[in-house]
Image (cartoon, rainbow, N blue to C red):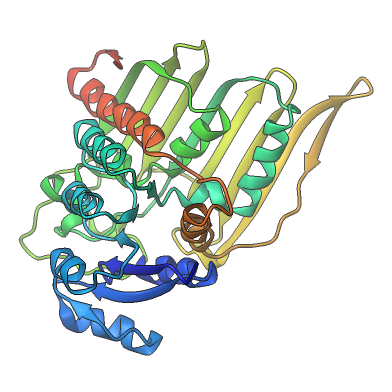
Length: 362
């Protein structure tokens, strides 16, 4: 079997990580598509990529040798591009969030089943070394069933630009909730992705007109653009298994510092995975920790699990897993069925926040 050939749709910031993971796993990135063809060239030419297109449609037609594509676009375009690629016989690796809502994700799942092709998403925090270390303890039975968990991604100042697609609901689907699903996904992964039952949530829109709460990534503001998404959301979720989960996501909230963590309480042990930032939003200032809380010999003990540092937050490793899964060398880190569950939960967060009532998740 020769090298898998991959095309990347979208030459934005995440393309760096997708490319790095694909190449690390032994695949060849053979083409780039982006409406801004010069941006595609600027990304591809230094990496010896020679074929560029303005759209996914053009790329699939012009490069029939492609085995798979990755989709790195504003959220609104995930569903149509993913389905187009699947229907034309390509495997797909898509950026998070999976879609704008659960209805779109169901269509993507149906398309994947019909095509027989693999569909995966960049839930990269599963691939972080400290997350994988904790998951091994869970899988080997050291934790027992996880009764409850807390998933937090709280930014003190992390609004990703004002007036661009991130803050425009029609393009993004929402604000902090849909942009920061990673800790929610990680907690659900630790809990074996139970079926949700009820959710009670509240959303807040404070600071969405205050430039002092802009994040440090250099995303330009769009003068006269739209800012109609939430800055924060808090929710409590119950599951049909009896498990519970508290989740909190924010771009801008009066907190001591940025908090990125999953804590859990199991029948045999508890645990916590946390990414501690020196400066909000800057990965290179972070320290990753992984701990297990156990009882041994009649005493309480905290087990510190030491892992290597990964400044890419698992993004390269997650993209590499996509290739390894296609080649049968590794189990896929995530599935479209799991993506549907997380989108149902996100839908319920927005519904409960709007109605101010608990929501049943079907």
